[in-house]
Image 1 (cartoon, rainbow, N blue to C red):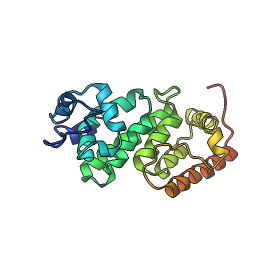
Image 2 (cartoon, rainbow, N blue to C red):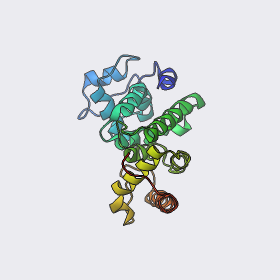
Image 3 (cartoon, rainbow, N blue to C red):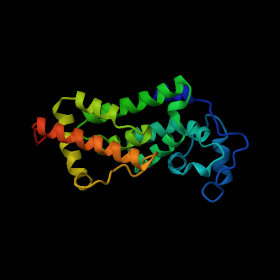
Length: 209
């Protein structure tokens, strides 16, 4: 989170940003145009969750709230994947290297920490869905999960299979806020299903953790 704060500190919305007048009042937009002023947590969440068309320059808006957004996510946010959609829509992976590295570093650290905690603030399956939504990819998050061979991560695997039981029995993915094409979403969920099948067949996950 410190790396994100350094990379995005001092950033603001565009000086002429007006935002959606129905969803954000003038005081809120003025806060977004002002650098380094702490934002209300509710505003940070609403900014991240809104469709990009609510803003004249949505990537600038996301960069403005990112130092606080990562804190909100790490502490346990409701509808975290919806917030991640705003990040994906902003095209963060095409930003300058320092910025992309900070975002990627946060997501990787958050995901790893969740896998290693018995009771993370946000359930592991939701953290996974959020990281997938933010990156429009499942591969790096599955690779990290597979590398975490301890009993806690294995227990989270069992819990997640139960959480996704309806989606696993159908072609519907749990990535409700996927930013990309429907075909890409289906392919991503197929990759997860294939991986889960291999993991659950190869590993006996201990209960009672």
